[in-house]
Length: 318
Ligand code: BYC
Image (cartoon, rainbow, N blue to C red; front, top):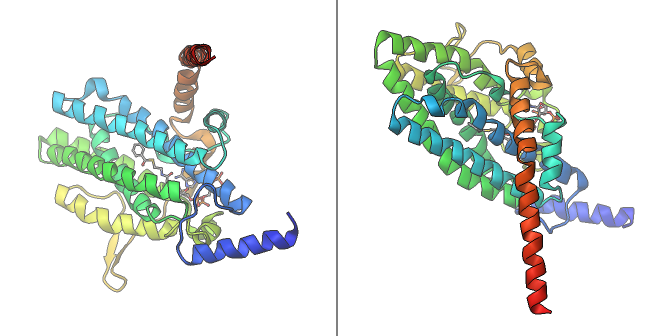
């Protein structure tokens, strides 16, 4: 294709984005748009799958049958979200195996939040309330993203995610209205999950490599800082209802801006975790790579079965 033809196609593409039209898999798109989407959607899928691990840790120890059933369903939903997202990403021309390889080799990232340990049952409440709460704020904005398969996956995921957030909040409510010990457990979980939850939204806008371009392509509808502020404004009043205190001495409602001012995030910790040196990075990767290796015989058997069926069908037809 000549340079002029590419320029023409780019102009048509930009105009479609401007008109808020959805881009579909067979449409022409700039190579950088495709690559950026592969990066973000696959990392999102990996986050869902790795995100099953900290919660999976509590399935056998949930305090009642009701709690266990709800947690099992939540973790299963997360596997489903991962699958929708891997499928959406495959429409951009990358295979599932390539995506797994990128995760297992450390080339692809996944959300920093899943590199923290789940020490007590209250952590399951805090994850639902804060982590799913942060995820919804990010994902509601993504329901309007410009790439069709990603936007449609997000609509479905958000519906399930809002249920996850409520089940987490209900755990926190029960604990915070329970014994002194239970309330202390809930406060401790909030203390440990608050700052990592704020980090989920990514670096400050001025330090974000991709935000400016992703906003132009309408992949991102809001910036990292805008979403983080929205999360804080929404969550602080919820902590008040629980009677728990947010571990930030600088947190204060600012009547002039109508938003909460908040303290400085420990960006050194954020980048340490992103680069693979968080408390559980090694453990999470070992779990994923181990599952892939242990599952080799299942994949081989499925392929052999498919091959056998294909031969049978061909023999019948022939
Ligand atoms: N953790 O230029 P930036 C869930 C990386 S799962 C790790 O701002 P971007 C759930 C970033 O990738 C929810 N890395 O990037 C599941 C980039 O590095 P690369 C997961 C991070 O993409 C189970 C570099 O830092 N949600 O809900 O414009 C149980 C510079 O950042 C993080 C999604 O994935 C981080 N927190 O913006 C419970 C949402 N932040 O790629 C719940 C979809 C940044 O150049 N993703 N980095 O090597 C997004 O919305 C965007 O990708 C982000 C980052 C806002 C996360």
